[in-house]
Length: 500
Ligand code: BES
Ligand code: ZN
Ligand code: ZN
Image 1 (cartoon, rainbow, N blue to C red):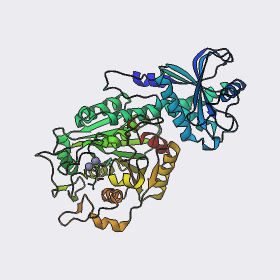
Image 2: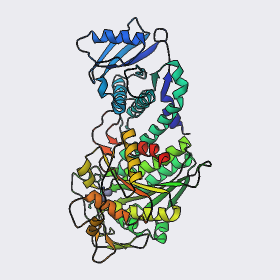
Image 3: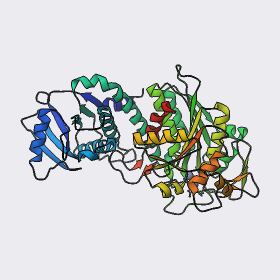
Image 4: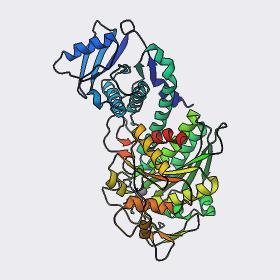
């Protein structure tokens, strides 16, 4: 285990202390607007006092702080509003915990004690309440300030979650799982937030390899020579314009106890998508450092699976390139022979994600014959137009697999919505000169035609495609995620892996 991971894991603790006896610096009490959600008499009494103030009713985001009060041995008690009971679901609790942590950071606190709600009024299972609070607190306590000289906010050193004594043992396993999965999400977030000049393909590859090796994953990297030799020509066409060479990273997690069944994850790793010769306009270029979010999600999921010692065999295939225009770049109209032998006409060099993914998908299916293969990619602007910035698109011919992804999406709040893949839309990808074209002849339905293009390279595999162009990145932080990469996909996959 890395020391950074150890530090992160020790950050969150379950504790059960007597508030009247044990001294704490800061006690945070979540307060519901209309019902009681605590069964400790001391806490109930304190809430009653807080609610006597006109300015505090328990409305969402209400806040009031009491100092040095006699009922508890805390320097300060911070009451935070959760809103009406009927509105409190897992996501509301994650957001609540994330915001609470941010508020504490802003006033330079280092250690807090958060009173976990547990009264009978709460309709969600106690395990889900704790899980949501832990996730929100852990993820909300992350700041990406690596590139700032002046670090204004410091993450809290310790967040204690106050629970009943008999719950500590029962939920400590849950705590370990959540901490590991959230540390994986943060790893993905940091990769995505890293500027493109610090993660050019060779560098991004080295970073993934370093983390993967620490967790004893089997690591293989195909360099440009190997890629050429093996015929990854669609992928190489995308990389051709960049000074930085293409890489294919293959991570294998092979736990001893697992059977033969193998799940494959494939992630789009474009470290910067300028559009290539079909250069993107100003306004569309700025977010394109995040075009490797699929790759980040896949690498972080494998690393997390190993840290968790999951009982599932997983392989991650991660094509990494930079899409740049130059004298050596591929051109619209070029025809390339993909890894599986089909020829592709490059109608638009900005539809580069699908070019690197088809080579990765066919290679992965041929070499590993996975039980299920899922690719995750910031593939199309159309998907963002269809579903907005917070929901990913899921495209699959397999109803059961699509449903399982949607369900894990609901559970983790990494929301996924299925889009159709009608057979007749394949017409739109016809090329006069090659076997297929990388863009559609229609302006509309780009998320669908993007997926249909991929599907031509998935043979008969049980496959799904997740388009995360919307939710991979946020410009403005909120709740339990700061501005930048969201790590979308890691929590989703960690929930999904042993269910498919
Ligand atoms: N990386 C983009 C997709 C994207 C758009 C990601 C917005 C995040 C936010 C992708 O490579 C792309 O440029 N897609 C084109 C495809 C088109 C040329 C067929 C698109 O969606 O416009
Ligand atoms: Zn593009
Ligand atoms: Zn792209």
